[in-house]
Image (tube, rainbow, N blue to C red):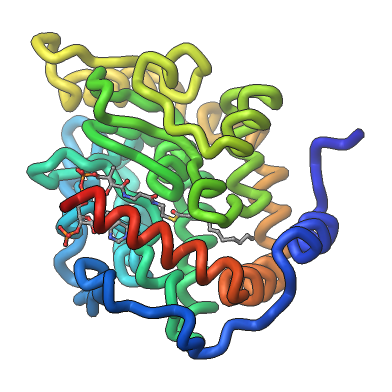
Length: 306
Ligand SMILES: CCCCCCCC/C=C\CC(=O)SCCNC(=O)CCNC(=O)[C@H](O)C(C)(C)COP(=O)(O)OP(=O)(O)OC[C@H]1O[C@@H](n2cnc3c(N)ncnc32)[C@H](O)[C@@H]1OP(=O)(O)O
């Protein structure tokens, strides 16, 4: 059996399982319990900071979309923009991706209010921004290091998977993984493939089915992160800088060509399939079934907070 499920096969299987009733502005989907998840209108200009150091060749991209670095469309565009800006400086060879939120949260994944009762005109653009972010980060000419000081679920995990190296704080409260199944959704094939490529087929299979969020120690064991930092050890930022310096010592052309060997096929695959991927996402996420499950998940998060 092939492990590379095609987009069409993936689509048919999901429709069979989840039903194909289209989302309307259904009264079943009430927002009254979800006051803490109100939509956020973003300004593009204050979501990330890029600090480039031509002397070391390292740029640091800090995410600070309060409260949890969840990925709204504007947030994803801002991260993409910062990656491209760093790439345009030929003196920069390495990028550290990190969070500067006081909570330490790396990224809570996609902004849930973009998925729940979505603005239907915005939805395809939102998804295209997600695809673009994956393409920009996974395919970057820069060596990329994720410095993960807090939780990184779902698309937060995608940000880490798209980097070349992952360093995480060893705090059991900080978990990482593709937990989509717990929300009644599923990772798109290109994201699931990253997971398979990084942690292996069997680990990915189980983790995708169960929506596992790994503790740092578990993540290290399955290879989802490369290194842990204990409190008291040198800071995660210092470790990221040291790793960046190690990558910079490799001749850039060879480093980029080596990256192309492992990532080129997947990047080309999504690049040639973006429209179909977007159409599928929009019809899938707007089904009543998915909307109801997302609503329940949001309620659960709000209650847990109380
Ligand atoms: C082709 C197939 C198509 C199918 C489409 C599927 C798309 C698949 C790809 C990705 C999916 C996703 O990324 S969905 C998002 C999944 N994310 C989560 O499940 C994380 C949910 N959040 C948490 O578990 C926790 O918030 C946390 C562990 C990240 C942090 O916990 P902590 O206790 O420190 O903080 P709070 O829970 O109090 O949260 C703080 C603050 O942030 C808001 N929040 C958290 N997560 C989100 C989010 N994803 N979107 C929007 N807002 C979020 C939370 O409400 C709190 O806000 P307030 O302080 O204002 O109440």
